[in-house]
Image 1 (cartoon, rainbow, N blue to C red):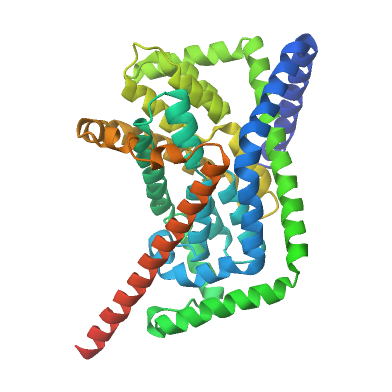
Image 2: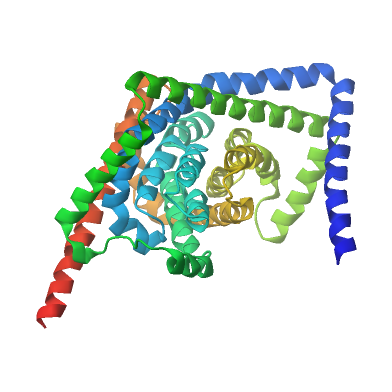
Length: 422
């Protein structure tokens, strides 16, 4: 057994070294193509990712410093813990992750883990379903830019975000045994409905004040630290985007991508899907933007619902570029990558299935056309107004979740009183 384990340890680095050497050789053979791919990656990072992600990175860091996450953590606990088996602070992460897109959810989860606000299992559950596309990209770039049809935004949003919530519910079954062990070790159980609404509100504000006191930084120091850490993260994100753009170009030059297209085409034919979607799915395996663009540009003869389903699959999988970003963020937190990867695959399959299931109800009843005529369908664009719209959506999500949480707490309190009187 030890010999087999040692061989596995040796084969892993050896294969990685061989692969990197092959990439270096291809870069020497195709220097112009490599440079052009790197420039395209930098353009995507500078024109799309930097303006859409950097503000949310800074805002989330500031909110952590001010203790706002602790405030929402105490208030949202009655909603998040029974449904998703994560603390209430996960509600804030979910709202930020769904509004600002990958990898903000992973970034905030790592921060909560560093502050011991979530356990390892809770962090793995949280990052599994809060890593999603942002509405600016989904409604603006994919629906309008790639498919040239704003009416598709509704079914893409329902499929992508709805299946993400289903993944969160399914991930609540992950790590039940570890949960039981942590409950035995825990000395301070979370407050229950018996403590009352007033107690929870007082606890929420005192938690925020305590978090602010422990942080201790002035506003200027907090802003400087938020900008510095956000710049470090956005540079890592940009580097990974450039790397995967170059990698895909080199694999294409070496003929690897065409072989993957053929293999994926055979698999699609086997399951009854159009084989012409193979290029979009293989591109989406590596990079989400290129995959979604390929889905929109697929053959005109292809049924539209299959093209949209492939786009939903790609958006929910996220691409290996996003996976690498999340893995780099989770490094050192103790959170495992495997549950995240399984959740991404499950999310991708569910999102594509949701598109096929909802296609006739949504498209046939005219809901898509009605959605396209609403101002909200055009609000989420990669512009300053789009970022403002996304911030407004985040506020609405937090407010709605808070109202549901307080309602659940109130109803639980009434039910407890009725049981006592009965």
